[in-house]
Length: 452
Image 1 (cartoon, helix red, strand yellow):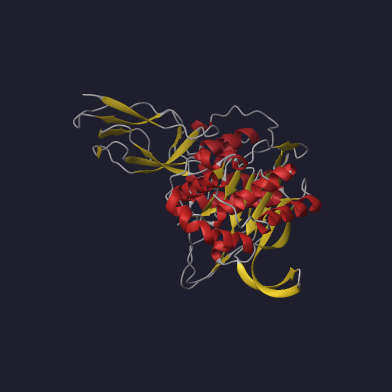
Image 2: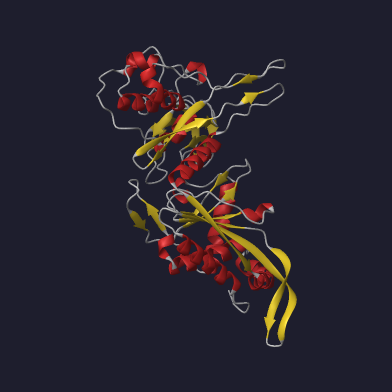
């Protein structure tokens, strides 16, 4: 008989733990090599964990919802179906609500004024590691923590509850659940609630408006990814003063060139040639011309980090309706074929939930194609800690004045709007506007005789 440890794999340099969201196999189930055993989630991406061994799952050492450290043993697989295995002590944090785990990496609170020696494990209530960490840093005692009313399952105190409690702490008030179930005969109004976003060294308290729930209304719980997206978008709008500039580009040459070469390209390379690789190439060239668009602002808000690499993220819609942004690393060093292969590979694996955490990290600039939904333009929100994001709209045929040696004439041309949102702390209108114009210039001046 041989037994093998199933290990929580390493999922990226900055990922130290993951939450088990679903076991695909029960104890006693047969497992083939590369067959999915469980699904996990980090604050970056969801992943399936395949088995490197063939045999029988004889022990699951963690439950769904548990937070597990990278490198920990999460299960035991045996080549003998009748084998029994003694339980291995857990090496990860106790069960944590998924929404708290998903946002733990982005939470920070003010420095503590007094140390707390209380052992929160002595409480008769369950508190997640994140909640206990915030309580410890804020100097909240066991008795005080026990007095906070929780809005989570079974009355548990969530991250949102304790952060909402902090501004009213001196008033000795507690936070009530955020909503009540709707009925057919009554209309209820949820009390206003607060949340926090960190801006530099300061914590901004956000008042959420009261929301009425009427008869017949449907209440839909956000999934884990939607909660992460919501938190990140709110944070970005607080951190960065957004400005959006627009240009309309005549992309007739680009469209005609793609129409001419796409069939032969796919036949020769086995890859579909979409507009996205063409846009990314133009963006990468423009970033080379204006490197100060490829920067970040540090956490103090006083230093600019000028990025060496040009890593372009591309927003991709998932079947669930959520968005994910896989990153093409060193896009300026790839030729058009290389960019095309990267775009197609990342897009296909994004739709199949097969991306690794490393593949959605490290972006320095983001491109989002709102034209894919029939929109002509958009005002995208910056993906922090980047300072700019470009939206490309749908391509439309329009009549236009064409200058010729024989004089002006009217012709049918292909036009597209480009929208650039940028962080006005470090990108002024002159930089944002000239960069955007340069991207449009590269698109407009596309060589119709180019070979790939």
